[in-house]
Amino acid sequence: MPRLSFFTTGRAPELLCRRHPDTPFSDATPADASDAGTPTLAPLDAPVDGDDEDGINTSGNGARKHMTLAPPAPPSKKSKKKGGNNVWTRPTSRKGKKKAKQPGNGQSLLAGGIATGSRPKPSATGEEEFLLVPAPRLAAERSDDAADLPVLLSRVFKSERVELSDDRLTAGSTKGYRMVRATRGVAAGTWYFEVKVVHLGPTGHTRLGWATNRADLQTPVGYDAYGFGYRDIDGAKVHKAWREKYADEGYGKGDVLGFYISLPDGERYEPKQPNVIQYRGVPCHVLVPKEEHKTPDPVPGSKICYFKNGICQGIAFQDIPGGRYYPAASMYTLPSEPNCVVEFNFGPDFEYFPQDFCGLPIPQPMSEVPYQVYEVKDEQPVENGVDEKTS
View 1 (tube, helix red, strand yellow):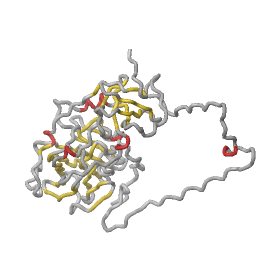
View 2 (view 1 turned 90 degrees about the vertical axis):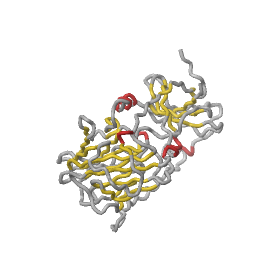
View 3 (view 1 turned 135 degrees about the horizontal axis):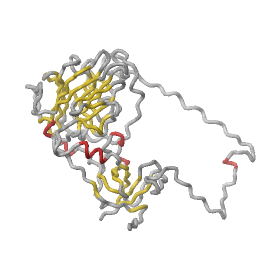
């Protein structure tokens, strides 16, 4: 069995590991958006202010907004008085004294388990470093989808503020933008689904589209590099928190939006999904720290298009990064208003199936995406280069 050497990171509950070259661990990013290291957001429940309700700049004719950072505070002056508290004036000789080992400042992975320490320096032996990240939601993720279930909205991969209907096809949310995605995604081929706007209200807004498993669920679709959104107010497209002119008009209550994605040979560009191993009875994702935030290479010829009531609004994005893309929705209203509500239709019977796909290949309905089985490997890593003794 291949050996996995692990080292602690000093950041509970992660463990930093070194893998011997023959260990078949993948180099993917987290399965969950919370493991993706997305930056922290400012509060999303600020009131709507005209066309800039979420504070995201537009690349149209308006002026771009920039944040000015305050200059760093000047360093404080330390006393140079002889015999004072200045550590630099103290004797540096430790002859005859053994240097005390500095304790780690982290916590243990398990009660009575492994104490954490500091992150080791890069290995000079050619071994690869990995993180073991406990996956406490693995059981919930497994029960979220099954071979006998259709494609539904996920009860796990959604913000806590998003409410789902009993059939898990309708989603509602109030206050700040929050996201929910489907249980299954696609990395290759050409696919399509619909979303009907059930209720907006006077302050409701939506951003709908596609998002990978790295997208932050506490943000609107298109906030980061892992989502591509379609905005209701003016029909703008959104990516990396930047709005651009796209459709001639927006959409509202009663409109049916179509979402098209084409990923030719996309499986060649999809980051490998993280392996899951059992360590001391705890399922853990095996991650590569140095590639955790790396944006995947673009898929040549890939495209995303949006439709309104069966009419193509044009190509919104091209050559998007490789990855597994999930149908996703984010909703917004003021706290005093009823939920903003949207209803998903993954097919095969669509309300407005387009007759013209802008000359692009005819898609398959998302309802035909097959179920993916979770595989958990039962392996015991090598603790700090020493085989762990098992009873």
